[in-house]
Image 1 (cartoon, rainbow, N blue to C red):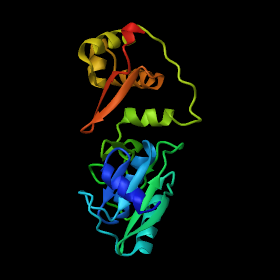
Image 2 (spheres, rainbow, N blue to C red; image 1 turned 90 degrees about the vertical axis):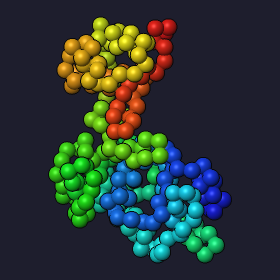
Image 3 (cartoon, rainbow, N blue to C red; image 1 turned 60 degrees about the vertical axis):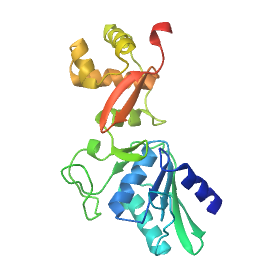
Image 4 (cartoon, rainbow, N blue to C red; image 1 turned 180 degrees about the horizontal axis):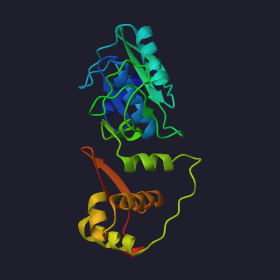
Length: 234
């Protein structure tokens, strides 16, 4: 990767597959970003670039590259080793870390957690809490904690996942009719609509996402579901 490639990424701006970081900060923050990209569609993290796209540069590329690699090796599970390039800009260096989409989803953040699911630990990999508080994904230009439904979908995207099976019953038909009229639904709304537990509602929605007939969306840490196409005309 050369400076023209970096300029192209900067011109595109932050988004689903690009993140700017003014500096190489804590390994915990780096690890969560690596996990999010690996769990979603992959992407680039540009260190030494401010939020407005201005090039700040990094201070010590060797020690900062070592910090990125440490975060990927010891604070991500399974470990993530991004491809790293150091690109010079008029005496300043930008570190570009490329994280491909992973076949080993879901990757989890392996550092310590505080009460709201953010890492604040010492990097020893010892922590409390379940996997659902450790999985991060990219949503637009942000790194967000994945819901339990999203974690299930990530597991089902693995190449070694068992074949997906579901039956189109009355609950599913009522869901499609509801979505035809209301466009979106949450897991809780679906469970109330057909009078089943939220756990069972989540299983049905996840199976429909895997089948490609329903899409899952995450907005402000909340999931909702929409039809992937017009089921009534299929």
